[in-house]
Length: 144
Image (cartoon, rainbow, N blue to C red; front, side, top):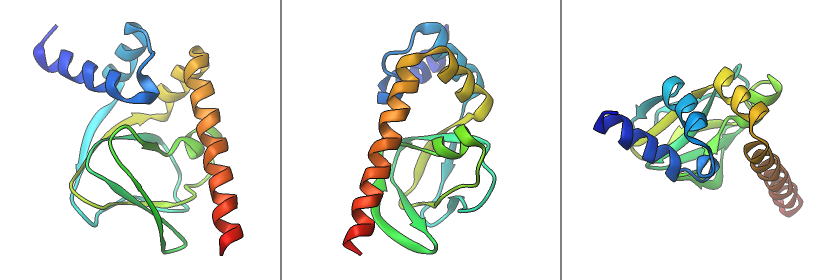
């Protein structure tokens, strides 16, 4: 195994969502995911667009915009986005913009869905995250 491969596998294992995955599961992500970089201000995904990937923030921060309005949420290393649209095939519910130079891991929906269907720990983490986000959104809307 090359040094680059070991480094990438360790970076994957450092992401909380993937921390408890087996070596074959990490290998599935390693073999199918790609690192991508964006400069500050660059739109990564646009609200309403069709989803095909889940993204994990490896370095830097991204900002969230809904209906053109920036939310007081920034995602950083270990955070992820795009899971809702990848799961249900619906359009993106928000735009995500690079708030700084950002390195992301782009995980294709086919890889993500295979991982979730074969790993109940990951599926549960995603469900808990979705519920938490929905609760937070409901609380934020109640304040407005």
